[in-house]
Length: 270
Image (cartoon, rainbow, N blue to C red):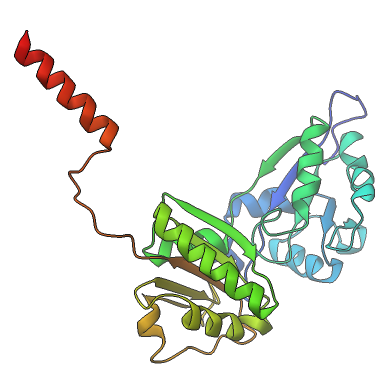
């Protein structure tokens, strides 16, 4: 999709979500998004093979062998990012594809998107599955105050100390803590969670989202201790919320209370 060579008429960088697993693409990606994607001829992808499989599903207009693909993954040096934007600067629209879910979220595409903004390029996020938001929606945990931390430390002692801190912050701020792990280490992370966190801390496990084998359950850590699910090699989102200390819902901050009392006293003396 070319727009000409005028330097002021740059291409658009489309951020294209992809399915989280082997799903019916019509159920996951809206028809308007599939139509937009199908018309593109230039892409930035993590793995060309899986990207071509996705483009075949959306009904790409061009023959797959004519599609132009540049690779961006965790091994791509930052100094090479600028060259990836060359087609956009020449007026060509480009699609950025993640391996699964939304590009630039827990994904190497974030740095490229930031550079696109620095170059005054138009960035358009398209609608599609986000495992993080789907898990939060289904968790029943605080959806107004939440933080996504990405991957936790792999080393056991650092992982445990991080979980202690996340639980502390969650309790203090009444905030949902969201994180992920490499699927083959899921079970170790789960074991660390139930060993480290308080029994009344709430933990949601959201596994294989959007797939036929989808599993989502929210329980206290104490309840999880009775039986742990098997999460090995399954894409999983973990959501944690510590139990906030009970408080009088009608209580106010001391400074506010003092102001109210002063106002009441002034009215009495006037």
